[in-house]
Length: 393
Image 1 (cartoon, rainbow, N blue to C red):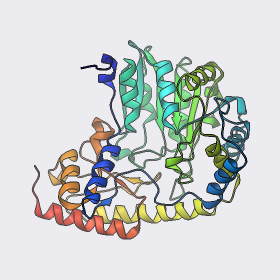
Image 2 (tube, one colour; image 1 turned 60 degrees about the vertical axis):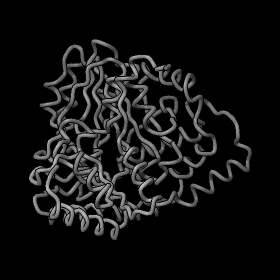
Image 3 (cartoon, one colour; image 1 turned 90 degrees about the vertical axis):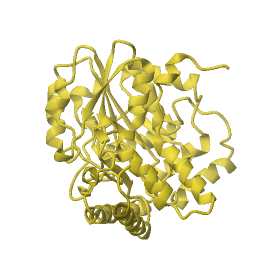
């Protein structure tokens, strides 16, 4: 039997898609399934964005574009970056990608190799670890601890850096925990990074607008001392409910930009042309639906925390960002992944076990708050009944 080279054995997956596939299969077989697993807004893409893509098609935008994206969408990203962070960015440093993952892929591929070390958040987005392992680099987890509201500790992060560390990956607001790292901690980290001038930083800021309770997102673009080694990842999927459009952007330092451009040429060529015009409309058009969606996520994250804390032997911090909660289920006696499987198969509720986001996720479950209030209430009623009626496996 033909098989891929051995390096592919090191590549992991994003289990949320496996859970989505199983939940969909069960629903197709007639089961009543409530999906709080997938990280996808339950809102539709704003209509003016859809119309912009339709217009682009009718106007004849059917061909290849520049590998790094049309000028108009890169300029729109620069305007949004200035509005959000106060920082000027050149369109020549912006790369448009088919979703956010290619930026992670490119950064890790360019900097990861056997003998290198890459720091990544744990619990964190699983593709970080997957791609680090694929390159042969050593993956070093940066713990995000519940007693620190799932923010990273600058002191602990800096203590993990060595002469072999090539890349530091950061994510705030965070998937899967909903944690937001305060400005003071970020400033402390940036100050400490002065001792490591050759260390690149990838800041995943895809949830930048999703902060609550007075918390403010702090972009690493605000720190000029690290701009020459900073990669910023962002995109349209979450803010404008455009997950299926596969449209992301990233901002690169001079030394790495041509590398990611070459990677684009060698892999995806360019991003779907009408989708890019939709991206311009999303950034420049009315933001009413964005605000409506954020208000719903704000309400739902409180509801999830309230209902989770109402379960026996479960505790849950109210998330400060993104649209996830990360309840602690250690006192139930269940391990995370067996509980996630049992809840889906027996109770019809799809969640993601914490270990799918790293070793520090054991004892937790990721709950997506991107579902209706009624679905959330119904899901937690089922979870409560299941926990009351079933002992740990």
